[in-house]
Amino acid sequence: MQVVIIGSGNVASHMAKAFVLNGIPLIQVFGRNSEELKKIAEELNVPYSTEHLAEADVYFICVSDNSIEDVSKLITKKDGLVAHTSGSLPKEILVGEYRKSSFYPLQTFSKSKALDYKKIPFFIEAENEADKELLFELANKVSENVMESSHEKRKYIHLTAVFACNFVNHLFSKAKEISDSQKIPFDYFLPLIDETVQKIHEIEPKLAQTGPAVRNDVRVLQLHEQLLKDESLEIYKTMNHSIKKMYEL
Image (cartoon, rainbow, N blue to C red; front, side, top):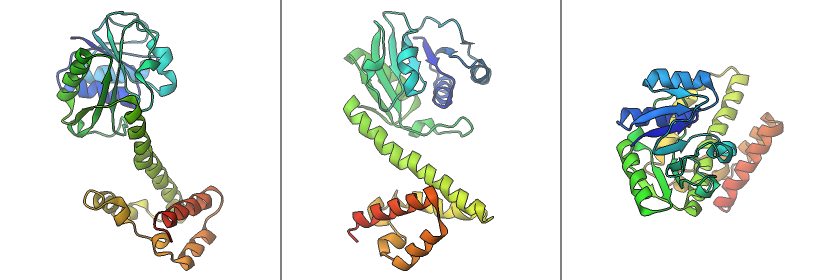
């Protein structure tokens, strides 16, 4: 079985590494960005191309959601299996006469950050049982946590991930802006961040909530609002309103 990964970004880079490390026969990484493709290819000792898409049994499309449909048109092998890695889009977004599927890794990917691939949940959807079994076989080589998921369920998995990861990271960025503005080292807050994340491994998030909003500490809330302006003030008010509503304060 021969595999091609299409893309050169964060997901493509990690998928390629996970496949090679676990003995999956990756015969090519393909895409538009020759510089990034070359980095992946040299690190993993696999061929790359920006022009000629190799013949393979399975193609993984690891590009932005906006590009998946157009990229899928490049694959002309009619008896091939094609999987996209989007959390939100249906397998039917793929355009071609090949077999269509999705292969969604639930993780945040950055090229500069190493990952334990064994812990990443993979969610698989395919048109038939044979393709599902094939994708499960590949995913099980990489991860210990592989599940089947319909597009309807996967949409909510991805939405949950946006709240749990993307929004939280944005708040980290806003917090760093505030600490930087006062020349307070952001490192001071890392133990707090680590404990906040670690705590929800043991306590339900709703029960773990602390802070002035859940206490309805009006004096502190008003003081904080005086220190903020523009977008950060709106975020602060919106978050506190949501917390109060959750606890009916």
